[in-house]
Length: 447
Image (cartoon, rainbow, N blue to C red; front, top):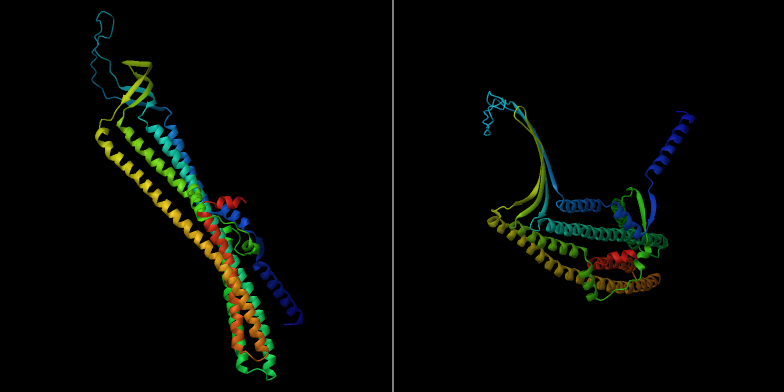
């Protein structure tokens, strides 16, 4: 291969490398928590499914309302007859010039009927059905709102997890740089005979361990990033940069009783269950209405033609129809008992949910208090570990402390910093869970 061919190959290889880097390069995108929430709500498949459920409930309500409208039926037939025997009971006058050969021969018949029925009284079945369907439509909308709050909470947790993963990478990178510099310094000491070879190996081993920790931290961050991309409907290669100021936002917390009362008033799942309870109670009334007769305004039109025999036109009728299923006297009782049992189940479920709401709010409130206490403790630990490292490092520089003590102090300082950052991030999640349990997350979202 001559020099020109080698140059071409190197040029093509360079282009391939540049193209590959361009192809696999990640797009960086800074994103705030509110932006993440908006994207997750926009792309949530669960919320789209809930919208379909709302449309179904709305259609059921329309169907219940349409039962008040009249029913209209049209029927007609053409019949071929095989030499029927017809005996006309109406006698004709033999001197009138009529047919003297008996009854006519009939081979076909045509008829058409139109019936219209407008319900006037059904024992309340229609009105109760409309009422129950209205309650169920409202419950479906509240279920969607409750799921919406769940999506928001999941987004917040994923966002905070992404922040923690990125913060972990930054802290480990900073600690690795310190460890590498320490190895460089101790290598010079070892060459000058001021440090035993074993102590240098300890520092090098810690540096290697920190490098491995960095790989784990980067893997966790990439996984958190992919999870967030999927949640927000973004390309998987988008590198998201979370807002670091989110953990420093000022938060005003109320008393536990205030949150409990807010939960009873604002929780969407509680309101939805209350509407289902009302729908079940209305269902009992609708079932009892089967004991009563039906009254309807009826009307119709009949036309018929039997060649050689009879033709009927303009036979319009109108009247009032009454129907009553006598079997409902002994068949409806079991149906009523079933409806009452369903209503009882809804009532018990409401009571259970009320207890769970108090428990959830109390647990979330205690977790919030615990998160604040952890922040205070870890803040002190950061100061203490920094001071401890400073003292041990000064002793080490004056040959009053061992390398092991220095390395332990360094790791303790790194762990304290991570604990503090994670505690502040977890406090954000704890606070938003408290808002969710209290039904106040929507108010926080509007701020």
